[in-house]
Length: 133
Image 1 (cartoon, rainbow, N blue to C red):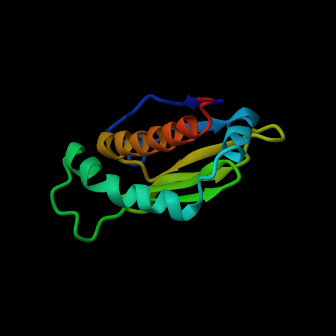
Image 2: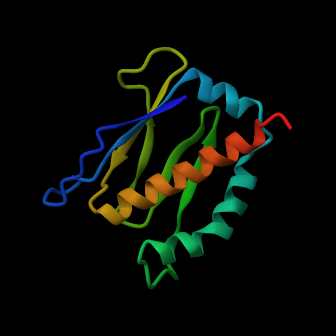
């Protein structure tokens, strides 16, 4: 369904905590089976953000925000606090029906961890919606 790539942080380099997430055809197919929408993801992030900020050591979050842009692959852009910090949609080195979330300005372990936390939450929402109960 997905694979995390280039997970080897270097806190001594600007952007040294970047990593990529490759989403495969099976991930896209699972997203299509859900009723998740941009609005539902936004509501979930609004509810979860205070906890994520707290657990990742953010103290002044009045002007901070987390966002996910939703598309056919689900999370096609994830943004966390920082200088335009996030994972962005790319098709670089991807086959048809694959997508790569590539890093942009991921400078700290805290940003790295928060991006992974948000992605895992989204993936869990997809998983829970596709369970056959």
